Image 1 (cartoon, rainbow, N blue to C red):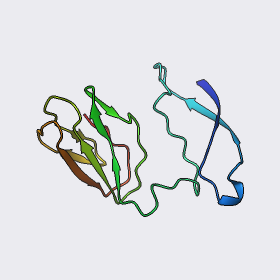
Image 2 (image 1 turned 90 degrees about the vertical axis):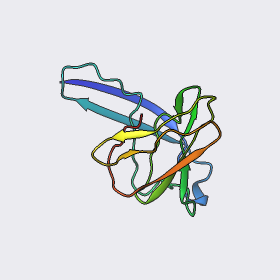
Image 3 (image 1 turned 30 degrees about the vertical axis):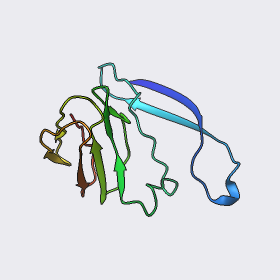
Length: 126
């Protein structure tokens, strides 16, 4: 078994009394397979600290330069995600994931499609 150790310092949304606090985060990830696994898309979840745009019902994942931006996003169950197309070409957004299977169809530059994420899980989009 390999162990990947990542140490980072980050800012987390905290109560106002802790506004100037800095938190050192130590993450230990145990990988039990023999394949090389990149941790660049890992998400560290701190229960009680994550605020998914309180009061805001939508998030955005834009298509720009033939890529999704941001590349990795945490979305609370029940949130709507907008997928605006900022490229000069037509795009389609789809997923075959168990948590959310969908196909938004082809749409033009400047257009946007939205989708409700109503179940928890990891959703890979293409």
